[in-house]
Image (cartoon, rainbow, N blue to C red; front, side, top):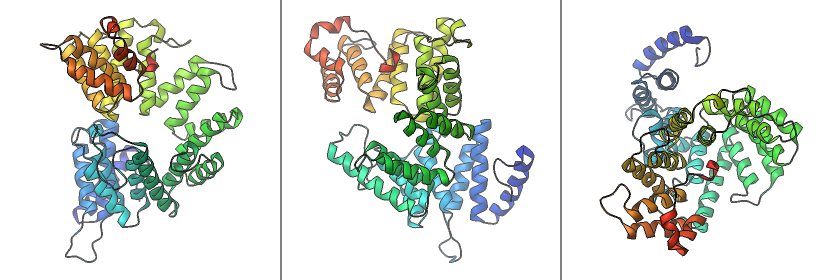
Length: 414
């Protein structure tokens, strides 16, 4: 049977023909694989209508005819459909965590472990609470609510791991490594990473390598990270970049570091996209690379594109704040206060404290507005201060520094 990634475009076209014929006859697995092909066409080739078609075929495969007892839905399609609802912005489609959660739950009810894994991730990432209810962007989390979310997430991961699901083992390992809902235990983390790795999860080997890196076992770290990178792990490329950037156990080499970060960025890892954008914004140069030859404005424009990509593909609050800085100050783009306010506001709504401070300062002096809004500015500073933002604390304590304030991005800017 022809599958994605085997045999190139010609065999993919042949597979598509056969899947289409079977899908038209109501075959659920064929509808799912046809959806996969359309999704691939959108991601790899930018076909504008492919994402919509992928979602439609996933929906066909995920539903069933109630009058036909032999007709069963495809749980893999349920998860794929849920993911397109969860990350709709990546596909230029509507986003709904509620719809995503429902489809993941449907898959889990069919004992499909990937559905369990995705429910756990929704919980861990703070998109739903421990009761499965949506968490709004402006709601305040407490230590107890976070603990309950993490505990519930772990329960789902453990349930999925019982089916030998590699992703669930990986996430259990991360919870033990970070001490989420369980006491920190690197030995147990190592066990679950190895379980996930043995089931073919390349990011598990990247996590294993990073764990060795934190333990200063550099030779083991480089071995596993290099192997994971060769197998297509963006996370592994990122950590190799860190090793070469800081000279961890080997000679420092910024040229090699930049190459690894660039590769990770091209593969779409969110933190790698931001890392490269921050480097370009701050003017870092790398031996043997052309970055240092670019004009400052060229670097700003490339950074601007990367920040926009991070917002479009990953809904990054940090990137939105950085875009606000660039539009406010005119870095690589014509200064536009209204656009800056919009980016700051969107970022602040996602609880980004730096954006709260930047927006507060624009509201304080009425920059880009018809008149100042000192009340909202004060509220934003108070919220940022409660979140631990040092600059907000200083501004609240010393009103005289407000006139001297300059907008700032994330700490990675400096």
